[in-house]
Amino acid sequence: MRFSNARSEQLPAYAVQRIATAKRRLLGEGRDVIDLGAGDADLPPPSVAVSSLATAAGDPRNSRYAFQTGLMAFRESIVGYMRRRFAITVDPVAEVLPLIGSKDGLAHLPLALLDPGDLCIIPEPGYSPYLGGTILAGAEPLICPLRPENEFLLDLEGLSAEQLRRARLVILNYPNNPTAAVAPWDYLVHVVELCRRHEIVLAYDNPYCEITFDGYRAPSILEIPGAREVAIEFHSLSKSFGMTGWRIGWAAGRPELISALLKVKQFLDTGPFLAIQHAAAATLDVAETLLPSIRETFRERRDAGVAALARVGMSVVPPKATMYLWVPLRDGLASWTFAERLLEEEYVAVLPGASLGAGGEGYIRIALTVNAARLEEAATRIGRLLDRQGRGP
Image (tube, rainbow, N blue to C red; front, side):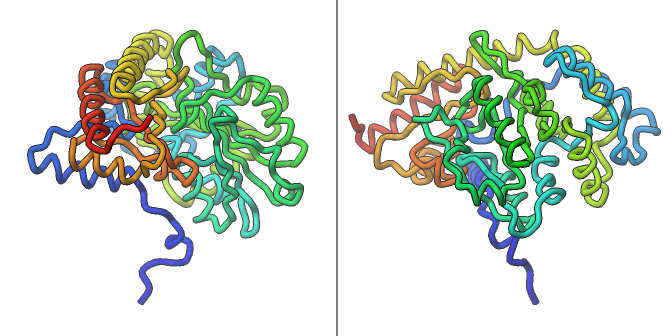
């Protein structure tokens, strides 16, 4: 009897789950664990979302199947938000699809687009579902490293003519997880032109577009001239609105790409819970009033984390966006070894860079998921481990 197949056996271990298991054990032992591993901030969801959910959950009609059509009010709220935020207009039916979180769409898009032999261009380090979805689709992942000397921008110019011919999909994510890099406008214009020239679909993962600092404004890929011919963009309420467990997001883009993803999802799920779609609609309708205080909270945490790490000898450039610090380790320190020792000896959970692909080795990702005081305490504990290991130059 077989209990797996060749595709599932290719999937790497999911690092966040591994860390969560260790955290649960340590908490059971009474340890004071500071969890900076998962991108799951301690911010409460907006009160408008909670009250809307409570009201909608009391209506029996919202306990029926949502199917992929979902709630038209949610689709219209998405249209309004994207018009106000990005000055673009999308059709609520043909160019929008509600998702059970953006992860849902990102992992399933390869099933809709890729055949065996097709290449999917994947950034490394990067979000694990990019690779997982490609493997499960039976396609071939083409791993492209994000390098600090290139500002962590995906370099498509280094690909061969044969690789570009076989590539059917490229996944881009800016502001970036885990590196916190942002993409200049001219770079995005260049990527769109390349995708159009080589007939490659561009999937743009944009869940951190609202967590920005110091005057930086993150664009939608659909703002870029020509992008609507080749692109599909993924959004989520998880990070920006403290709604990670609610599992609600959407895709927007070229109608044919929305239709392809819709067709696959019809066989996999029946859409997000309608009451949550009501709550998401209410949240997006007032997004502009909610986001300033959320951004300010993450900015304070960013500044506190950067300063605290500097005090223990770890240099981090303050990022312009996201809820992460991408922290270089001293030469010779393996990220998994460091992260495991930090959790077991100092009870601080961080994400080892290598868990997001070999290109992440030499770094750890710190999520700004706790308040400034806890970040400072975490940095103190990191410093103690560094002292024991012996500081480098």
